[in-house]
View 1 (spheres, one colour):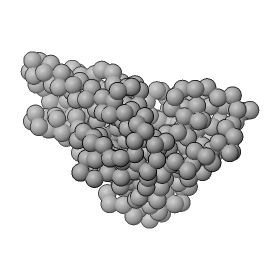
View 2 (cartoon, one colour; view 1 turned 90 degrees about the vertical axis):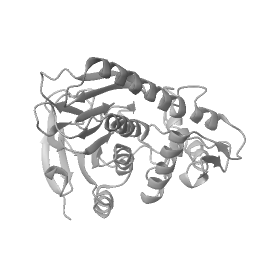
View 3 (tube, one colour; view 1 turned 180 degrees about the horizontal axis):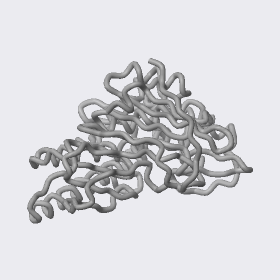
View 4 (cartoon, helix red, strand yellow; view 1 turned 180 degrees about the vertical axis):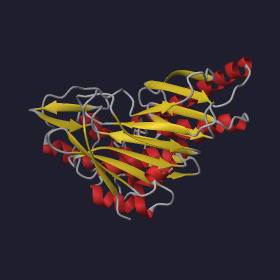
Length: 339
């Protein structure tokens, strides 16, 4: 399928989130909070009793805390931190949610031919992102090569919730899928509580079901990924029983000698991406899958990415390409704007 191409120019300021939601302003049935180093918001398209909403909010917070305790690299005694810091390479038991995310991450590692790789964490740290260490110069090539020998999803083994690694120096980071997974799990929680109309957003990753309080399908706006300007909406899409996730190069980067280096590291080269892809938004039924695919597509070149997405079932995407003089070019698969 040939992609749709349009050209845009940045004019306004870009907001913190990639996405915004359009909904009935009179809808007060919502909850929000902090999680995973960002914010979350849940808006219901239907009204429920206040005491039920309070109980639901408590369940959501407890669920998010559990996910954090299993998968946050910033919690020293989390399950993922224990695995990363462990020197023993023998298999260890891991909890159910951690196992689910790992299994899907390993699946997308193979499906993307290694473009999506959760073992890239040591490289991310070396470039001064994951551990927040500020770097003053480009890492030495020899150092990058030495780290690359411990990168690769094929160096992880998961069976019956038992996880092992081929070398003690291998570390994993689920930051590219954990928020999407949390969105999916909250969606299941709402459905199990007989709530069928909702909007869930965690750090810009979104899932919608049914309709908003006005009886209309949820409308999501995708913002222009410009490093200096904020706020311009470049596309609007409707989401019904679908999720959308966006990865981009503009929100987290380092500037060295006048050049921008993205926090998205190519696990095959050890260096930040340099392919002019500013952001990729992916639609899927699962927010975790959309999250992983969007990350992989940031690594691939445009043509390979389009070919790959067209080979996947019920997946659509939009790429925003950074051109010269503040111009942006978008490419969409045929189904992206038809939802």
